[in-house]
Length: 148
Image (tube, one colour):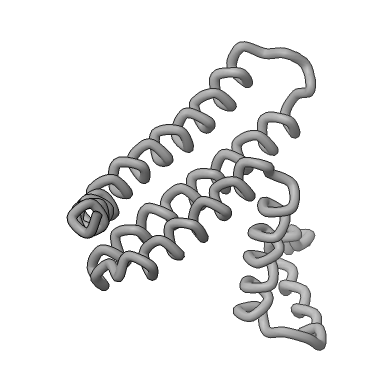
């Protein structure tokens, strides 16, 4: 006795993938999306613009004070960490807002903790700045003080 078995959808051949769309490759497209995320954060987040302004001032001060390459590396790590923290804060806020527009104590915790991470990172950057720029500024003050 033969039993007719209907093929399940798991037995069906997989549909062919559509041909690749013209334009950037998926790898290059990932950069387009990443830069769109950076652009969105800069455009919509006031604190990101504040962080970037302070970053430019720190870089200018480093050039003016002739800090060493290792000191510049420390400054760039501090800048990058604050920018990344601000972007993760933006992600957390967007996810919470997507989940609920109503007040929820857990939503508040998520947003507060993400903002706290940025604050802690910014505080660490200030400490790094004091260690990097402090000795250079003290030497400059000594030189200016001795010439008077």
